Amino acid sequence: MSLIELSQQLYDSELGTALRESIYMFPIIEGLHLIGLAFSVGLLVFVDLRLLGLFLRFIPIDKLLHPLRPWILVGFLVTIVTGILLFVAAASKIVLLDVFFYKLIFIVLAGINAFWFEVKWGQQIKNWANDEQYPKGARIAGGVSLALWSLVVITGRLIPYLSYE
Image (tube, rainbow, N blue to C red):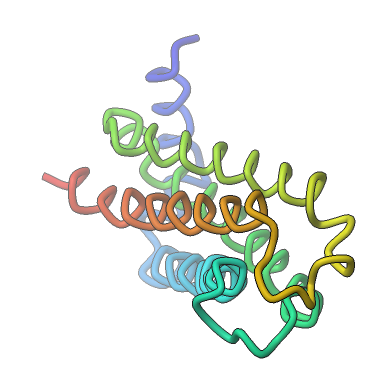
């Protein structure tokens, strides 16, 4: 089964049809998707800017990241679930867009960057959290995260504008 055929099946499914035809469900899911983005990517922007030394310089990174981490993770969970539902509702149109695949690539790269940060720097964050300047690798991870999540949001916002005739 090709990607086009699979996307058409999702689009034609009971769930896809129900989401598309409901006067309330699609806007509610879209709203929850944006709220999830605000919590996940929005709070991550604070962390990334702190890693770069551009924001909240008086707060050690571990004191910022630790209380925000659960909110960021819940935000990502909400964003992923609602993103899948939004995809199902318009799958046959979305898979025709190059920008959708760019978005997926940016999400994967951002995930790899976050994993690398956690493995390389996150386990020993208390050792350098009070340093005047953070390790170069941690700063690079913050800058890459900021760039990639910005690209995810930009490409995601392009999808509805490019997919409707």
